[in-house]
Amino acid sequence: MTTAPAAPPGAPSYSHTRDIDARRGEPDSVGPVTARLATLEDLDWIVGALVRRRKPLVEHAPVYWKPAPDAEVRHRAFIEHLLTDGGAKAYRTDCSVLIAARRGDGWLVDDASVHGESWAAGDGRELWNAFDVDAHGRDVRLVCPTYERERAEFAVAVGLAVAESWWLLEVPDSGGGAAGAQVTMPGADALTVGAPPVYAPPGPVLFLRAVKNADRALPAAVSKVGDLGCAAVVVNQTVEDDDLATSLAAAGFRRHCDYYTGVVGAI
Image (tube, rainbow, N blue to C red; front, side, top):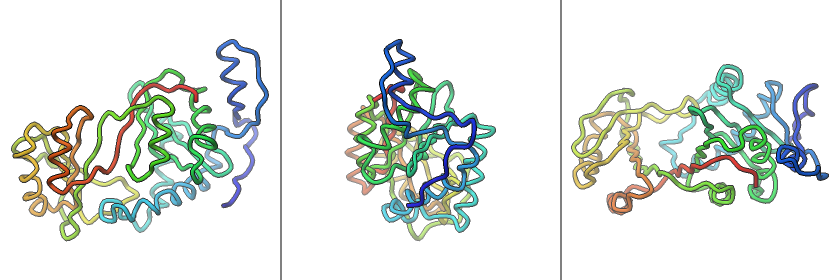
């Protein structure tokens, strides 16, 4: 693992215990400065760290997460936009990074790479506490692929809870459809959605954002996906809808990504 360069002059750094104690009016405690606010000078390093995080995920959803040929170039441009025009904040240690993007009045944490299993006891803790200094008490939504178990355990440790899950059915031989189309679907609200720029599946996703009748919607979605030229079907399931989860599993879908929500707080 390549060690990242030192902070540029003027880049804020965080001794989390000291900053949090000061905000709470408590005496300073002594602790190492291990995380800092990243800058555009860190952009190439950030992209490299996120590439390393994405690679093992691809094997779990090779169609849905098929990398674009120029994924690194596209991701670099996207992150630069977030940090300059999008109001996002990025935090980094020597080997881990967390990017918090604006989401309404709160924050969205999706792009984050923590080295090894050090979410709760190491870098993840330092990064989150740095984020807490800037966003304490704000709403946050943390994206957590179900294959990243340490990330999920950390979400619970910082007081977040699953609000909804996305269930996935890949269709390897389908593709060529158009994104952005509203789809008439019995028992569900549906549309076709394009992949994020770092991915290049052979077609868009047929996204069922609200299922009212699973017995009608799921068979219809599976039968329509090929005609629509979609490469996958994704169904949104709210945490309280256990019946939908049972129906999805029976229909061959797998729970693919959980979305944790709550408020930002130190750990």
